[in-house]
Length: 392
Image 1: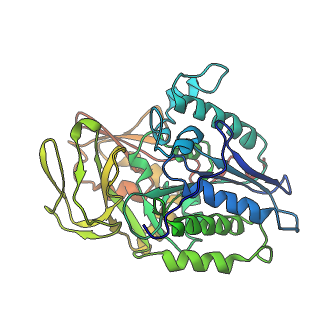
Image 2: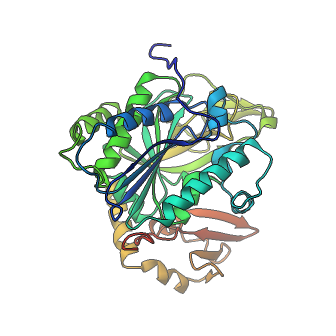
Image 3: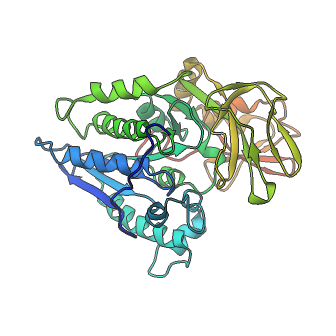
């Protein structure tokens, strides 16, 4: 393959720190993770390049920077994971298990324990906003794109980059690293920088990280090579549409023997009823028309494909206005909607409230859905508009 990566990152088992750069301790903090999946070497390689570039900047930084390798044990053997997917491992039970002196026996338990220790030190000493990047790549070709947990703080940050934004995908996945960090109040941005093993993917990851350093205000716009160079790299590789809402996830297990049909790339249009893949049960057809996202062309993975649709910027603007006005509090006045023990979760009796489209709840940030018989639990993220770090 032209442009294939032939080198591995310079990492050591269990040593996650690629680079640490400290300027004003009262400024913002940026944490960038590369290669949470060990077969996605481009992220860690890009962070090594960023570390080398930061070492040459002479003006003081307005904040702190931590560049971290993800799954070091899997990365050294070029596999997605050793025992279990590290980017599905950040559940409450696993975090509790791996937060103390004792830890689990899985390889990814060790990785998680090491990363948790690093994160505790970073977050406990933060005195201003904290940003986190998670750099990934895909098995299919297609334009790079960002994945954004739906808080207004995340949206504001993501829209500073000239890239396609996916909303709603993180709410459909359990146990991701960024979900854990979002729960702690960190501003997060996931990034799918291109296809595995492509040199261009390293370049887009490097550009995204530098752009984040400028957009967070940690690096001054007159320092280094300036934001224009990196925005140009992102703009050249970016596709359209600008904002996409994820509407469907096709979850899989190894028993399914899932096989994606050849030829699909990210953002290719598909039609309702189109045959997309096969598994042990037969053919798999698209449940709706839209844009295909992250079709799986590798052996390991829990997601066969996603389907999204373009969202007009008007709806994001309307959503922001409604949420700043705290209109979500009025949802309890609707019939069939009641409060739960969690202030960020509502219970909906769908027999009563079946006429309310879910898009209304999406507008107000309630994107995580869990069904229990005829009752639907809808949750929104904490720290939607305010930071637990700024001014601390």
